[in-house]
Length: 118
Picture 1: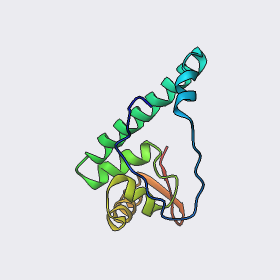
Picture 2: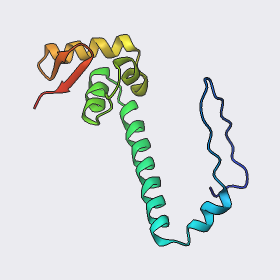
Picture 3: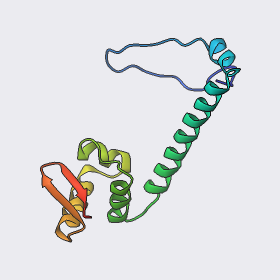
């Protein structure tokens, strides 16, 4: 929003929709305190989420990283997607989840579903 030129490109790898938002209109909307607060809250949430991900992927041991990811609620899709988020191979994620289930720290009520033990 605040740069003259954005430094990134995007590539669409499959069919999709694109919405153009006028930068001048958004900047003008900052005059509305409610919009400015909502924008600030959203930006803060994104920064917090990114910081959390950096901390999680910085954890060395796969077991600790997977547990941190589970605690953070990052396993909301497939285990393959979860592993990619954690920057682990899906094989390492599956092995680690199996170990955590075996150790009684995680429940596996159905295929691909894992929950922390209460």
